[in-house]
Image (cartoon, rainbow, N blue to C red; front, top):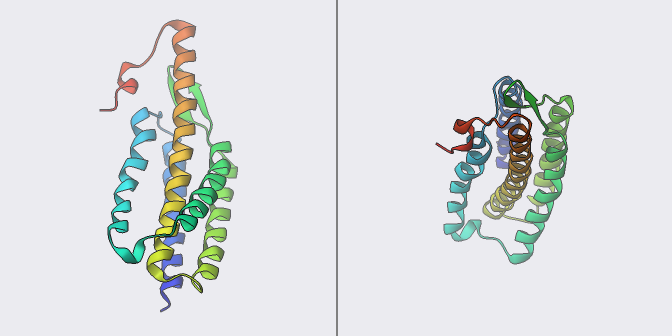
Amino acid sequence: MNIVLLSSIVAVCMAVGAMFIRLKAAKKPATLKKIILPPFFMSTGALMYVFPEFRLTPAEMLEAIGVGLFFSIFLIKTSKFEIRGQEIYLKRSKAFVFILIGLLVVRIVFKTYLSQSLDLGQLSGVFFLLAFAMIVSWRIAMYRSFTKLQKEMEKEDGFYNEKDMKLT
C-alpha cells in the first residue's frame, strides 16, 4: 500500500478521534492544564529532527509554520469559552467539525501534491511542524481567552477556582 495513502488513512482516524474528544470535552469544565499540556506532549515529536532525513530547509520551515498559523485562525474562531455557574466550559461548535474535516481534506491534498517533490522524511517533518505551529497558536489563543474569563469571574464576585489556576 502507498505510504502516503496509509498515512492519510491514519490522519482520518485521528481526525475522527479528535472530533469525539472535542465533543466529549465540552461536557466538562475547562482547565489551564487541559489547555496547556497538549502542545507539550506533542513537542516530543520534534525529536524526529535528530535524524537527517526529517530535517527541513529554512524555506520549508517558514512555509510550514506560515500555513500552520493560517490554519489555526479557523480553530481559534471556533473555540470559545462560556461561564456556567462558577466554571468555564468550551462552547460546542458545529462549525468546528466541518473545519476539522476541511483541514483534513486540505492536508491530504497538500500531502499528495508534496509527496511528488519531497521524500517521506521531509514530508513528515513539514506536516509535523505545520501541525505543531497550528496547535501551539490555537492553544495560546485558548489560554488567553480562558484567563480573561477567569479574571472576569474574579471581578464579578471575587471568586476563582484555585484548582484551575494550578497546573498540577
